[in-house]
Length: 240
Image 1 (cartoon, rainbow, N blue to C red):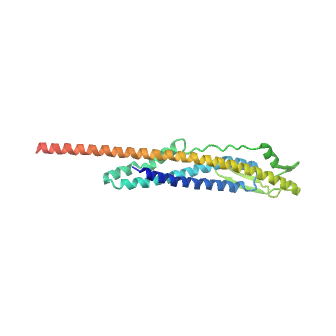
Image 2 (image 1 turned 180 degrees about the horizontal axis):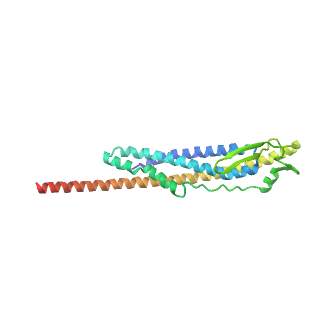
């Protein structure tokens, strides 16, 4: 079995791994959010894309955790006799746990990101002044978001026409709205980190339970072998 001290070390490394992956998600989402893209597109983007990334990162972290656990389990297994080592590898514990976890509701299921916003602010931001749409005279930008949003042409806002004061007013509201979204993304990812860690700890428990079951089977097998050997010896003595 894996010692309690070793498990704590694994969980500490796992926590660091989760933090790194969450930070990567945040940076990737912020990178797009900071672009001068259509705000309605960005709103849909941040609702779906972080969740997609979380599912992808969860599978990476699942493999990472199973690697940590298998590495420690093998340190003990190598001290067993060859027959028992063979039995362990035949169990294929790593793939058994992974397939079970991923087949249960499709693996990690992060909560949807629910955007709370000032709709009035969003509407006003999308129209810089009466009769002047933000997209008027804008460039056409193209971006693809796999599995979440289709490839589409998005009016850019970098070439907004109109008086300088209108542009400044628009940019200020645009910045306020994006900052509001960033705060919500931060809160969402913070909660998602806890959910992800909880999910991975369940994976750890499942692995340990299966490992314990394997050792119990070995103990039972060893007892049966001893009984069988004693019976064979008894028969030999009786017939001699």
